[in-house]
Each structure stands twice: as C-alpha cells, then as structure tokens.
Amino acid sequence: MLSVFRAPIRESVRVGGGGGRGADGDGQAVFHRLRLHAAAVAEVARPGQFVHLRCALPGQWDPLLRRPLSVHRINRGRGEIEVLFRVVGRGTGYLAGLAEGDAINLIGPLGQGFPTDLADGETAVLAAGGIGVAPLVALAEELAGKGAPLTAAVGAQTAAGLVAVDELGKVAGRVATATDDGSSGYHGFVTDLLAGLLERVARPVVYACGPEPMLRRVQAMVAEGGPRVRGYLSLEARMACGVGACLGCAVRRAGPGTAYYHVCHDGPVFAAQEVVLGG
Amino acid sequence: MADLGLAFAGLKLKNPVMTASGTFGYGREYGEFFSLKSLGAVVTKGITLEPRAGNPAPRVVETPAGMLNSIGLENPGVDRFIEEELPALREAGATVIVNVSGHTASEYAEVAGRLDGAEGVAALEINVSCPNVDQGGMTFGVDPAAVAAVVEGCRRRTRRPLITKLTPNVTDLTVVARAAAEAGSDALSLINTLVGMVIDPATRRPVLPRGVGGLSGPAVRPVAVRAVYEVAAAVDVPIIGLGGVTTAEDALQFMMAGAAAVAVGTAFFVDPVAAVRVVEGLSDWCDRNRVEWIGELIGAANPGFKGRRPGRY
Image (tube, rainbow over all chains, first blue to last red; front, side):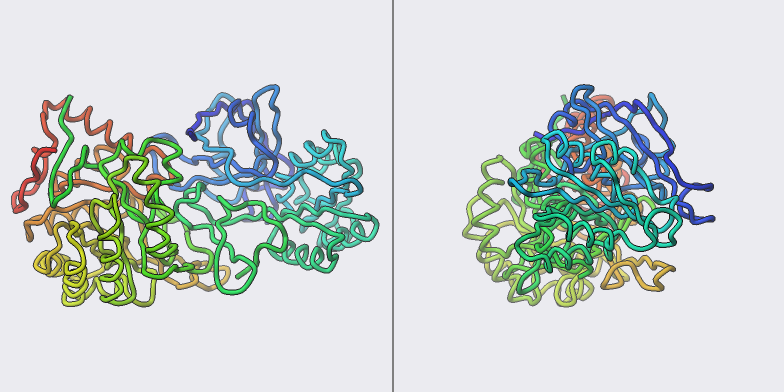
C-alpha cells in the first residue's frame, strides 16, 4: 500500500542565487533546499525517484497540484531526505516559505530511479544542467558508496545558476563546471565538457539531468558512442497525479508509430534511446 | 450510523461517492492507497474500440484552483481493457462503471456490445463530452440529435444500465439532457470539463498543443452545481453530479441540488484518498444532522426537483 505522509521539516534554507525571489526581475536564479523527516520514504527511496509535494495548506486548493521534486539526498540512518529546487512560481514559492517545524504533505518515493549497477571497467559520468544537479547528488552518493569510478560535470547559464557543486564534489571528486556566459568555469555548454569526458573514459555510463535541449544533445552523444556508451536521462514534465493514473505527463516512445511513456510511472529516468524528446 | 446506500438506474451503491472518469485510470494506482470496495463505484478511464495513443505533451497545465487537461483518450482499446484491466477491478471488489467513447455512433455501440458480455461491469457511462478529440466526444454532446443517436445505438447492444455524461459547453443543458433521457439513458453524469485555454506570453502560443483543454477542479464547482440544479428540475432520471468535488460539503451541495450520487475527480491528484474522506465526511455530517438515510437529502435545496427518488441499497 502507498500512503500520504506528513513530513516535518528539519531544515529550510535558501541556496545560492542573486537578489529577488524567483527568476523574475533581475533574472537571478534562487534555489531552496528542504530537509524532511520521512523515515518510511528514506528507507526505500532510490536516486532518481521523486516525491510529490502538496503546495497549499490543508483544506486549501490553490495552487491545486502537487509539485514533483527529485530526491536530492537520502539519509537512511536519520530517516531524512532532502529536496533541492529552483523557486519559479507559486508552488515552489510556497515550499520555499516553509520553515523548520512546519510539515509538508508528501507522497513517495515515486517513479523509476537510476540503474546503478556498473560492470567492471565502466565509469559513471554525471552531467547536470542547472537545477538538474538535484537528483545527481543522491546518485553520486550511492555510486561512491558502492566504490564505483565516478566523474561529473555541471553547467548553467551563469555562475549564479551553479548549485550544489560542492556537495557533488565531496563524493565525485573534482567537478568540472561550465557557464554559457563564461562567468565560472569553462565558457560554453556542459555537453562540451561531457564530450571531453566521454573521450577520456573507456566505458562511460552517462547519467544526465537538465533542460531538454541539453538532454537531446546528450542523447545524440550516447547514440554516437555506440555500444561503448550507456546513458540514462532524468526527465521533467508537467504532471498532475504523479502515480500513473491521469496520463498527463506523456513523453513519446522511440520506435515506429505513436506511443507514449508516462514520466511519473515509467520514468522519470529513462534509458537515453527509449524516448523522443520535444515530440 | 447513517445509511449511505442507494439504489437507482439499476445500480446498487453502498455509498453515493464514485470516481470521475479519466482521473482514476483503471483503479490500479489509487488502489494502492485505499480499498476500491470503500467507494460506491469506480468509473474507468474512457475506452474506445481500438487503442488510442493520446495527444502530444504537454497534456496538463495548472490554472487558478483548477487545471486544464488534453489527454486525448489514451487507452488500450476495449478488448485489452476486458482482458488486462477488468479482472483486477473485479477482484478488488469494485462496482465498475465503464466509460465508453468513440469516433462514430456505431463505434460507441460496438464498444457497448463487447462490454455487455464482460463479467463485472455494473453499468456503462457514455462519454459524449470529451473536449480533447477532433471527432466524437464533445462533437456529439453539443447536438441533442447526435446524443440521442449514440444512446439509442448503445441501448440496442447492451442490457446494462446506461449513464450519459454530458458536456456543459452548450447553451441549454436541459435540452441535451432530455434528448439523452428520451433515447433510453437510465441516468446522467454532469458535468464533463469546461473548454478552456492558457496562453504562454513568452512563446505567444497556447500551452496545450491543441490550444484548448478541459478545465476541472474546484474552479468549476459552482458551474457544475448550477448545471445539476437546472437539469434536476427538467428531467426525472437520476443524476451523478461532478465537477470540483473535494469534500463532503461539496458533495452535499450536489446532492441538495438534485444529484443522486457524486464523483470525485481532480481532487485525487491533490489527495489520493480524497474520495474516502468524502464518504467519511458524509457519514459524519448525516449523524450530526440526524439524517438517517442520505437519500433524504437529494434535491433538498431545489424546489423544482422532479427526479425519481432512489431506493435504499
């Protein structure tokens, strides 16, 4: 049976970013991290899965829909999970306004996570665009715990959009960074850094999360790599139920004819060649 | 404890709370949260003769206290539904109402015919009100003669009770309601979603690929209550009221307007056990207000109510 949980907030902190709230005004990204006590969720959560969070008080119905946020970190010993998100609208604004001691209405963990069994000789190559770094931290922690070889690259539009790079670095070693405007790290796209990593690593397993244009490029790079390269993408979608009932979060299946997967239930993690993005 | 059971239109419901088609899949997902036996009935996602892939993404967008959807009747087709989905619903002990859709009147009738032979189908809900397909659906539901033709076609192919689900996107809902009742519909469901649109100024395009989608959620509730109130004063067939039901108080509004039962839909997306809470809330409310049988409340706020009163379970 699945349950709806009431998870007390243990920590609520704004992370990085510039001045105003959200992406409006100065265009600076604002990120927020919540640490929640939800032992039953932490016990079974896997990297790449998500939790579906209610963004209104009990008895209130606006904003209506839950927000799906990937599991950012898992601490089974303390029965805690963390979520890291960009504050972009009313739902994430509500979540960012919650304080330690408040509680959050949560369903999860939901969806299919990242496969983390690497064969001998394979190396995990993590690539994140912007807030796409969120699920990759939990993934890196699990991979590092298994002793898997691991390398990572993170990109954003500007330096202010780079988030959780230090957390990732603690388990992934050196993290290469890229910004579109050159304000931090390599001047260009994270996929340029990924291309270099794919050349240096004998048998890469790519784990990517970020905006759709980035993921389309990663898909192409995995395909060009042939059988030497495996790849997994974590997708974002407009979602209502989160459990596979409403069929709202469709993504095209690769292959002949028209058929759809549902991101909440079949994903959010897909093998790179399974899906057609932007269709 | 108050008696919540009702019998009408050939249906026996242990309580007046159902699921709204399209919000509950075929019961598998929310069956993980609560027993499907605890509801009056489960109304399935719409079924067509052939499988349908549905519409491209995005298919949903949030609106104030509501949402638009443009799923496009994604479903496995009637044969696979009977083979792969119906047995689990039956085993879960659910009272199953199958929502039927199609491109043409003959397709509706064919689906109804195939379901007539299937075990564990309590009734069919004829969906002449889906706004998210180019043919069929709402294109029938806005035309009283077309509604009558679809209902008559289904009536000839099945002995099961027929419920016709109507669209509110018409000038006078009572005209369509009468046409459905006279054509042999045993009950009516109202309302399906309201046609709406959201435009993204940044892209200068509607967010949904077909432009329009169906508006649901608490935002539509007053429209739905009004629709039930008007139709309940115009026809005598039982009405299933839906549109933004989130709590027992909402359900009571629909019943007092003249609905014999209600369906919970979009609220599941917010609270997976919303319908169970509505059942519990109705029981508590009746106890507090010394209502022995919930059927007493049907039409209580509607002086023009002309429906036949349901029987006890």
